[in-house]
Length: 232
Picture (spheres, rainbow, N blue to C red):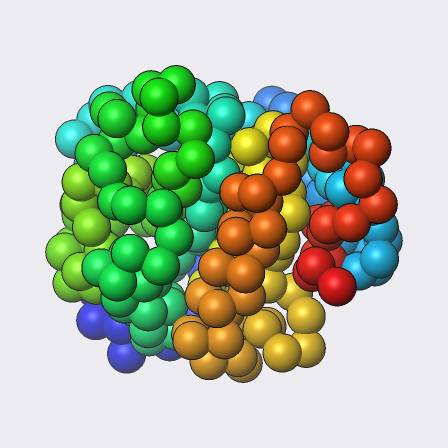
């Protein structure tokens, strides 16, 4: 779909899809939604130990293969939620430029990223609010590195709703223990309002801090970010 035709439609798209969710799916995700909503209101000064564990999920990629977030435990993760609107395209292109520049850990094939030998490597996961074909077209149009980016389709928006990802583009950083250490919900990085460069820059900053942390010592340190909080 033309990004111009999807501009401004992020929130309405989620609402339209939500009424079609099966009742059991809504109940299954309700607890995860509540946890994230409460942590999001906790402010920016919470310690590393206050970081919530990101809700687990399994989705299919554009080729129909299933992938679980748990597969990437042990390395930092950049989790994006995109719908295909103009703002999503701009954010994806900004991240693609960061990937090409090698700002974070070197880009590696996903098979290598999952191996224990490369736990310092940041994995990029895109949850696309649409069908696999649309997700494939979006990835191709924005130039994200195919070898190191996992593009997953979320046509029923179940995962999108679990993460409170509307409006998009939503950027979430996870530390190596699978905890949320950053989400763009501040005045200077809000979806549909902040620039793509601002959103991706904050995400990079959060990941750099997370990559240097000892995941076993994280709960003992009073530095770091909770969901909705940035490193001070």
